[in-house]
Image (tube, rainbow, N blue to C red):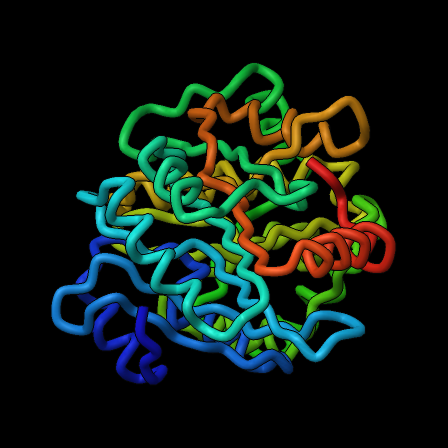
Length: 323
């Protein structure tokens, strides 16, 4: 794997049929406001099979760095040998560890390639490897609870609006609504309004509101590319609980996307469980979309003590949820 410039990377990227949001130029622009250095890699500049950008992260209490990659771009005709060869080349770079997550649908060739290159599953999964994919090209088959909540929301006067020219005020409002969501779901991270503004102004990003009496109750930001959509952020105010605005928001988005010829919508991760996060799964599963498994998280550490340190840091400092 060779390093390339940011400009060259996105020039080469046009050779790929599908680009998930986490490897898009839109997402790069969003991440670039952060403090971490972003590096770009490709296996072949003329005829690429695999490419990705990742964040260079300093290991806490150490001078070492790790590379964190979200969903490498891999052409569909890959084999486990393809994966293994490129990963072994990646390991030659000067990082003490590599953490790779992927929201591409599970493929056993992918897993075999990773394992043969020495990658293993992390000590604790920090992201659910499951999602729901909704087919937008066929008739919707929501369950009765979904239909009932959409009807109640419409009767309560909730309407849905696409924000075609988002402003900084929209970004600030979105972050404010996220604070409500954060409290409700006990999330550990925050959003930055400047970064959100940069994201919603991007070419492949769309933003929708669910409103009642000109008050925004719920909002959603998603990415689209080549007729496929990926959910990025969804926020709900505390007031949205009384009128089921999140249901009608999804319902109207799906109808609009379907009428525009889009093929699929990835809901983002689902966290089925026996505790509070199960409500997210229950909500998304009411769409009766197809349950899918992602390729998920993989790690390679050249030093086991650094791997243990990173595990402890994530669990006891960042307090990440385990899956």
